[in-house]
Length: 171
Image (tube, rainbow, N blue to C red):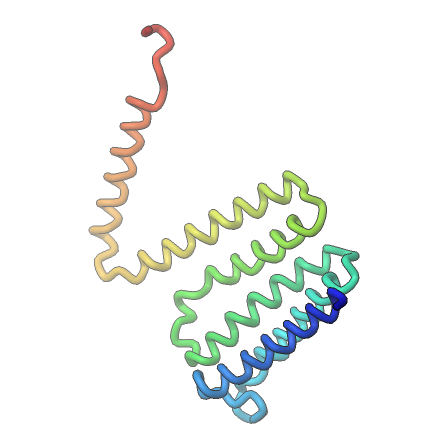
């Protein structure tokens, strides 16, 4: 079996399962165009076209960047539409994650540049920090938590200063 056939077969199975889940779990009938629930699948199709363009030919790994970004965003849009955008206040870090995913694919299947890897790691850290901030934003008593967090950071920093380095003069 050719790799292209394997990839295409898996792709169609995943799309079919997604359609069933959308219809029977989230009660989204994507073939009812008036409902407004279909558009994320169009966005997904665009992302998958970019992805397939690379994986079927193994040329132009730059296609993975927009493919990854659009695909991750489309999955987020599907979630948002299914939940009637009730969680959009909390899901915004996924947009940063989408860029991270696209660049990571370029790193993994492309040049393996150290600069690109560093960029992916920085974006991963920004995504994680953003997700933590979103969680903290949801806490009802943010001021008290902020005071505790700052105090904990200062204590940890003090411990690092005291015990983190060995003194050169001591034996």
